[in-house]
Amino acid sequence: MEETEILAKLKNKFPQQVKETFISLGMEVAVIDKEALFEVMSFLKEKPQDYAMLLDLTCVDYLGEEPRFEMVYHLFSLSSNRRLRIKARVSEKEPRIASLTPLWRNANWLEREVYDLFGIEFVGHPDLRRIFMYDGFEGHPLRKDYPLRLRQPRIKFRK
Image 1 (cartoon, rainbow, N blue to C red):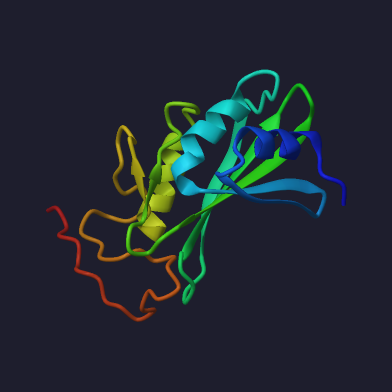
Image 2: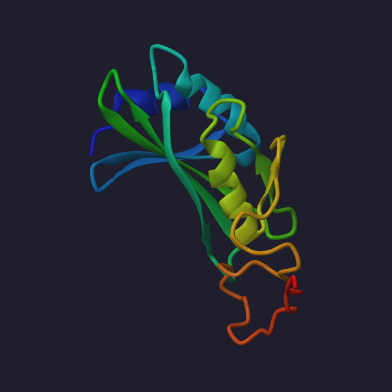
């Protein structure tokens, strides 16, 4: 399929940081270097690109591969009515990536969810703490190597 304008712009502006671009099921996708995440996303949010909405962000665990994790960001442009998916791989040895909370306020809880369930640390996040699991919970339950029958420390009940 023919390369779209936004993918061409990304490759032109960030030739070293954009690793791959393609179309998947009609959606434009760019795979970038994790160190360039904040800079690339800032560029995409600005006009004329105008990807002003962060629809979602999540993580995929590719157990057995390195880098093991893949962060996936879904953006939407109201002016062009287009979606864009940005992907960045994150190593198991150093599970850190830049926080997008300064760009999109809704990234706050989405990043906390990924932190809680996958253990990815978001550098620069204003309040990175668990959002689903209790404070004493050990591990990250959406990692593919999480033991299914692991017994967690019990919560002390209030009287």
